[in-house]
Length: 120
Image (cartoon, rainbow, N blue to C red; front, side, top):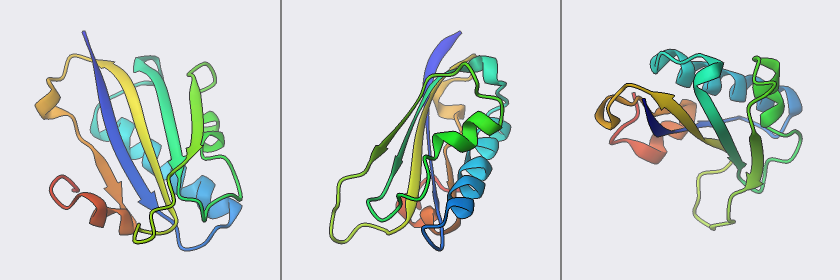
């Protein structure tokens, strides 16, 4: 069993609590589904949000998906002037038998523009 990092991001239309929670839940669920993971496989998740998102902690959405005993952290991205706005990112550390080349990184909605090389 190896420890792997999985990246992902999602863009929301507005800084509204329900949008942040819904988009984060979608992102986390898709990361888990595409990588064949259960919550027991997750070591920790770091969420970041662009400075224009402050209506809710993205980690709250993960808690609602059953991540009760998984260490979660939220932080703010640096305010780069030309950065894509209203983006929630995650980096999940997981235990998996998958080789690094088989890890599925997930970029949803407008966040696909961040990583055209790996977005699906």
